[in-house]
Every structure is written in structure tokens, then in C-alpha cells.
Length: 481
Image (cartoon, rainbow, N blue to C red; front, side, top):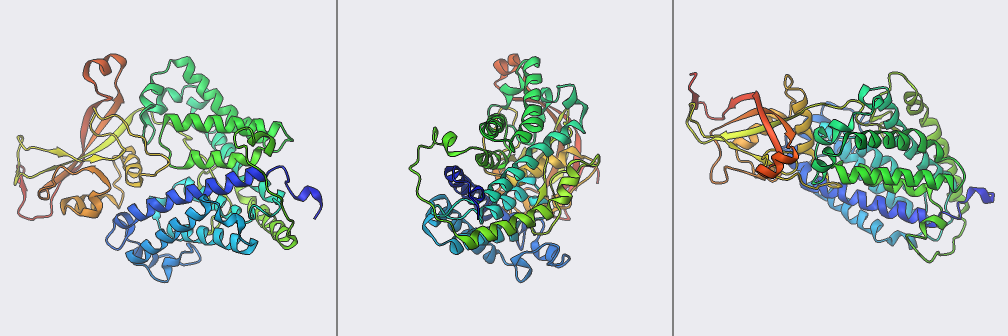
């Protein structure tokens, strides 16, 4: 292959891409080990066996089509954790090219098996992002081999779609992105605020407009510069990294921001990255057959990019969609519309045998989503709280009850240990509640004065019942009986 085929100045970039993606996979498999069984296991809210009975293998390829059990899920998650650790520690750097490639492809296949049966609990754009990036990482080669330039360009193409897709969906969506007011609401109404979100929300209006302008530049201008020569490409990467770091500071978005920052490494040459990572570069060897394979993978991605690229420039642009069941080339985007008010579902239980106006109701507390107004929002990203995120979506449509919600309430009525481990606090540790109801509230961040006077981070207004009292026992009655 000619010299241009090898990115000799991107040795450190490859290291960052592989180690960073290994860490993201590690987090993803840890999340699966802890959360998959209560959400999607044999006794989960949306059991996988029921799902795979209605879906063909070719539409959602997964190892679990051959057999699913909670024990097998644990084996898959633990295997993913161990394999991810080898990537983080850089052990494959000394392996032969075929072994390195096989390790990444196994990692990708294991997580694909989880995502493709994860249903609504895995219907997030960062799942496909991690899979697409992990597939590309398989063809970067170990540290001793020459870096194939076409694969680095594919990483930039992926980063371009992530950012440019998000920028276009905003400009085509909510008018507040065009009049620069969206971030006057977003820090308060985002799915899961973090410890600094209250302070970001209280920034002056002109700074919120500056935030939106910065977002537009990072998502609509900087991605175009990724394909320019150095140092312009490095400048574009820096803009994207700074913007993503701002999002890390202001909210909890799972590993989306972390992976995007890792992808931005593909824009920095060794001269730029060596200022932060002063690593002694090893010599590299050209592997001819590996170069040929990299070229074939590039051709495959180019062909599969047709539909995602067409979607980017379509007036009917859709976001976070996979156009192939292997999730090799996807479309991305987020927050095309911004909610102006925050709604929360609060689950309350009681031991009372009869419902009266004096019934004592106790609230369940979630790990990340707001419930107690005096509890400061927590930092969880890059860890992903799947149930908390789905609770946010459920509150947006009070007239619609997702199919996982009634089973969730039933699990709480049973004091199911696996389900309760997904929560922060169970107010019925001694014995299960007799009944549970779900109340819809409107939440807003307190003002500076309210914060000083009450110590609360939120103030809330009760809007009504989302679900009336539910019970397992047929002898439980309310005052309406």
C-alpha cells in the first residue's frame, strides 16, 4: 500500500481510541451485569424469552436467540467485563493482528447480543454508538502494526454523524434552538440533572444564549472541519471535546459524552496528543493483508452509509436509528425538542388496609431521578441508570402507560429484591406495602432565595394521579368501595 494509506502520525490516537472504547465497554457490561436481569431477565419487567419468541434472528441477531437464561446473561456480562479489561490494560497491543481483531469482534458481538434483545431499556443512541465504534476498533490493529488511515477516517465519519446529526435535528426542530433560548430550560428539564445542573440553570440569560451558539458551532461547523488538514482538524476536535466536557459538567448522559470525546481523538495527530500524553512511540510494521481488510471494511461502511447520509439531509430526519441489524452504520441526534416544564412520577406505598383521607403514603426514592426535593441531584454518568431514564420518558406522556410500568409496580408490591436493588430507598423494608399509587408532579429548580431559605434543590406541585392505587390482595379496599 502507498504511504498515504498508513497514518504514521496517529499512533497515540489509536491508543486513546482503543483504551477509551475498552473503558466504555467495561462500564456497559457492568451496567448489564447489575441491571439486565431485573429489567429484562426471566422474571424481569420485559422478559427476553417473550421478546425473542416474536422476533426473527435476522432482524435482531443475538446469542440469546439460541437460548436465554439469567445464568447465561451473567456469563456474557462477565466475559465482556474481562475482555474489556484487557483492552483498557492494553494487553492486545502485543498480540498478533488476527487475535487482536478477534478480541474486539467478540466484545462487539457480546454487547450486540445484549442490545438487540434489550427492547426499550436499550433503545438509546449511545448503544449503537458504542457498537459502531467497537466494530471499527477491531480493524485499527495492535500497537506494533501500522495504523490504517481509512479506519481513522471512518472514526471521523462516525464523529461527524454524531455531531452534525445532533446539530441538524436541533435546527429543524424546536424554535428555541433558533432563537437561542433552549438552554434556559434544558438544564432543569433534562432527563437526569447532576450536582451542577442547578447552577447551570441559574446562569444569566445571555450566557444561556452563548451556550446555544457554542453548541451550534460545535455541531454544525466543527464537524465539517474534521476532514481538513492539520491543524484545522485538531482545532475541530478540540471544539468538540470542550463542548462535550461542558455537557459532562452540566448533566448525566450515560457514556455518550465520554465516547464522543474518545472519538475526537481521531482528529488529533501525535504532535497534538503528545502534549497531554507524552508517550514513547513504538515502531510499527506494515501487515499487507490487514491493509487489504481495512480497505474492504471501508468499502462496506461507505455502502452502508448511504441511508444514514440520506437521512442526515432529509427534511424528515430521524435520530438514533439503525439501518442494519448489526448496527454498523447508524444515525444519531438528541433533543430536537426541549420540554419547558419538568414532570416526575412519584411512587407511593401504604400499609393501610383501607384507603382513607388519613392514609399514610411513603415515597420510593430512585438513585438518580428527582423525588425528595431536598436531595441534591447525583452524578452517575458515564454509568447508565436505565430505569431512571425510562421513568423520565414515562412522565412526559401521562396519558400513556408503558407496558413495563405495571409489572414494575407489581414487583414493588412483592418487595422483589432484584427490582428494589435498582432503587435508592425502599420505605417498606420490613414488609411489602398493601397498595401503591403513582402521583404526577411538576418540578422546578428552586431560586437562589428558596435555596438559602429551605435548603431544597427542587420545589414541586402535585398535578394528580398517574395511576390509581394498585394492590395484589383482593381483600384490600379503598374508601370508594
